Structure formats: C-alpha cells, structure tokens
Image (cartoon, rainbow, N blue to C red; front, side, top):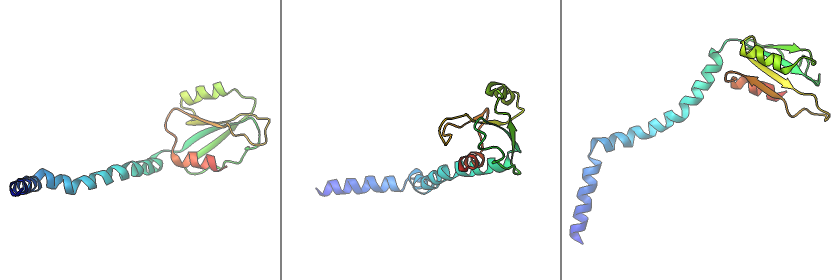
Length: 133
C-alpha cells in the first residue's frame, strides 16, 4: 500500500507543477466571468451607439394614439388605422422606418396580440418601453 501512495503523490505533484495546470486554474474562472459579462456590456453599449429610430405605429384599436412619446432615441409616427400593414412592411424593407408597432383591432377590452416588426434587432430599451404601456 505504501508504493501506491508514493505513485499517487508523484503523479499529483507532476500535474500541479505543470504550467498549463496553473494557467487554467487561475485564468479559467476569469475567462468564464468575462464570457458572462461581455454580452451584457455589448448590449448596453449598442443601445447607446444606435442612431435615432423611427417607429411606425399602426393602432387599429385607437387606444394607444399619442401614448408613445418621442425621445432622443425613438420617434413614433402614427398612421391611419385603415392603412395596410403590408405597405408599412415594405417601408421597413426600404428602410424608411426602423420598425412597425402593429396593434390589431380586437373585440376584447385589452389588445394582447400587438406585434413589433423590424429587419434588425430592436434595442432592449425600445422593446421594454413599448411593453410598459
């Protein structure tokens, strides 16, 4: 049994004294923390870098007319409720608007099936602002 302990001790010490073991031990956790923090920082910075967004609002219910206020980052352009959603989608493809907020008419009291159409990723601040109203 004594020989087995000597072999285990020798193998352990050769692994621990290896440079790659030391590098992985100390830099590994730092690397994983960076992988978790980097996407969050990039998402927050991309909202600040983006230019002013033009959002077309097609509200068939009429309940949200003039509820969205224009900010430094977003401009809301309201369209007549009789306008066609497909014509607005073409304007998004032509990059006249950055996104369309479509709120279809409903027979219920609360429209729960509103949709946001866009060719590019919508900033988190814009989607959270729309969800709060």
